[in-house]
Image (cartoon, rainbow, N blue to C red; front, side):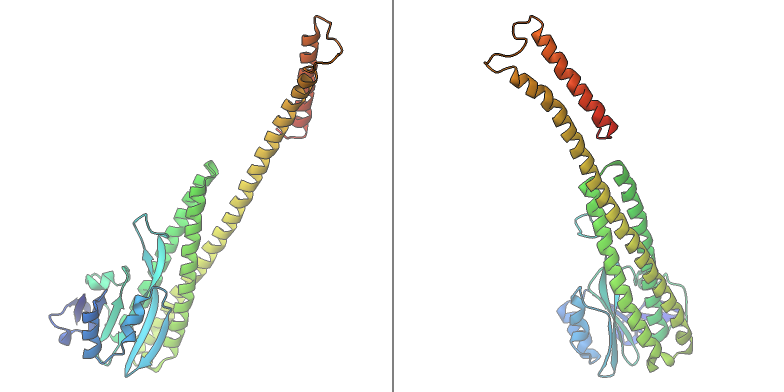
Length: 310
């Protein structure tokens, strides 16, 4: 789908044609739509085709008078069938001589405010809009990181009550999401530093000042991702140790029970033999043997209790 927007009173509103548009957004474009934009603005084919790869890394490149910036933006999958709830995907931003073109093959919330015209008014230029997209990207990273931390705390509380594999798998998924976020944020940081040094950004003095704020927000997101990742990794190790220790406690308890029951069984087995045995003529032989077996079992239980096996 091709969406065109023009600027009116420092806001984006839908444009009738792409000729009057300042910003063109391609949302999961078909091959025909992609070819139409490529031919119209004389863009290389890989400017759009590369973005279909979910693993495409952040990069900045110039070709034929156009600049391509690929950012890794955060995604939130609401359906339960997804392997992870939080992931990242590429977002392409193409700057031509007089237009900005964004391309996305994945459902990201980063551009939603601008597409719906609900963004804060600002002096819209190619440079300022590009940095606003970067700023929104960092803000959504921070938002999703806080949600990951909230869910991790909830899972931790559930694990205190029940050591089930289900909670451990959910923690593992949170850890995978943090790895995705951390890697993507660091890649975006490299792009921002390259932009800060580029001559293209220096054409807009206000954007040149704004990029410092964007870099600070991105660094804050990186630090949060590192902190939460360290906490989650330590938590996983701690719970793995707890589960292993609980297994040792259970095995020790069962072993103690087995030994305690084995002694009466041994005595009963001996007195069940078809040979001459002491007290076999005594009318109280059964009571004496059972009493001895019970006393030995009680003695073993006392010894195990003192050694804290129970």
